[in-house]
Amino acid sequence: MTFSPELEARFAKMIGNYPPGRQKGALIPMLLYAQDEVGAVTEEVIEEVARRLKLSRVEIEEVLGYYTMLAREPRGRHHIQICTNISCMLTGGGELFLHACRKLGIGNRQKTPDGQFSLEEVECLGACSWAPAMQVNYDFHYQMTPEKFDQLIDSLRKLQ
Image (tube, rainbow, N blue to C red):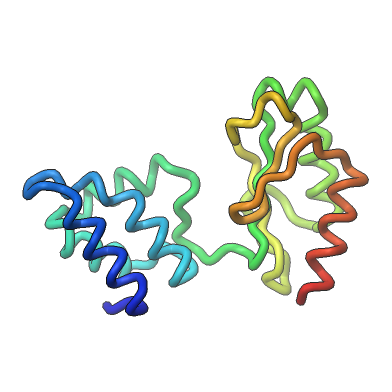
């Protein structure tokens, strides 16, 4: 499998930053960058990353099973993660997540039929001081309310 020239260059540089025998440290960033380009961590991505890092499939499967930010199936164009951990829960994160489910008509780890949105309840986004927090792709949104959520979704729908 080949990736875009930009990603190929990024992978080569990343692998080169690690001494021989320690290149496993590049695994998670490589999977994330490949996921961004391909849309998911596919079987082909797994095989290619394993080959480049000289890792077994099991080593990659262990990482895929642990990190929820790595997905085997394509997510929506706008992947929404809503934190429901303690700080966010205490400031309305649980209610915000339920509101998002109703607004989008989907549940946790599901995608809208048009492929525009996917939704995921997450444990922590590291933004406790600005709870409740959510993330759309790589953009953070703080002190979210159902009203702010609706406005954000409506603005994202207009981008289609």
